[in-house]
Length: 330
Image 1: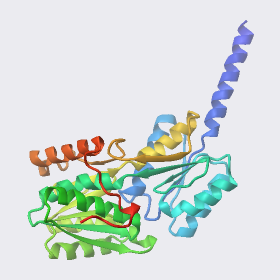
Image 2: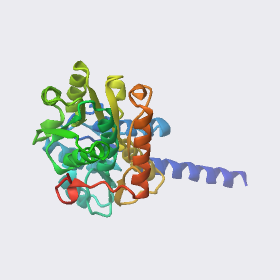
Image 3: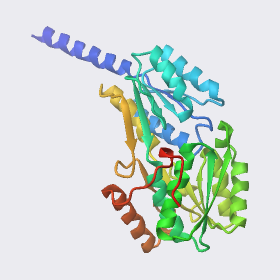
Image 4: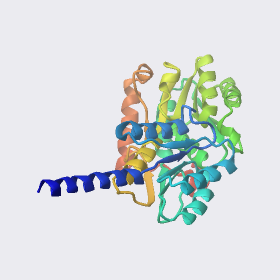
């Protein structure tokens, strides 16, 4: 009896080891750097949380150019890493190709959709989160002029701007919205100097709140706003702490959850492919309010953003998604 019990325990231990061995996580960031305090860093935080909770290490890679992403994804898959998370729309074609080559490997792509059985596509309703921070910008602005600085000029970033504009107009119908994109290549995500120049130009035109959706470029936006005693809005990660009293809020996009859940679901053998669309209702996007910015948020502003959130969840407010028709209602 004792021998049988020991044998069962040994088998159970081997099974647990085998299950853990099947989880060999990898992470490929978007261009712009791991510690951009924004999009990529949110992904890093999700991976770190999984590592801390489970003791399972992961490997990651920071591409500096578009070709390196596909090389890294294929390299991880060929070395038995599973799952492989690709954090950027830029890796869409790479995931399409590599997922077909490695059908037994699980892949996750953030900000794009790839229709393969072994791929989970995680997309966000950025327009909803941007609407919320737009409400706060419209109410906080004393000049009636607000700004937006985007990174790479693509429909995804226009989606942020359009939601922001709708939110600001919902509380201040005649608000003027300035907008600039940093560039048309991946370098647009990592140019804080240019981000600062665009912000200063908008401030010179009267903007007193500027929203950055530009990865590491946004750090220049936040810095310039602080230097000129204006308000800024951070993105993806909670950036309120970077310039307390100057960052009005941050449009938090839970990329950390996409990474953490991908690893945890694979470990628990609960991985599913298909599309996950995360908005306000799913707590995938939000306006961050904490000790760093609460002094900037008046009771009127808090009530307005709470109502907007509730109305979006109830369907009373339907925020237009720029990517459906490449247009923003005025």
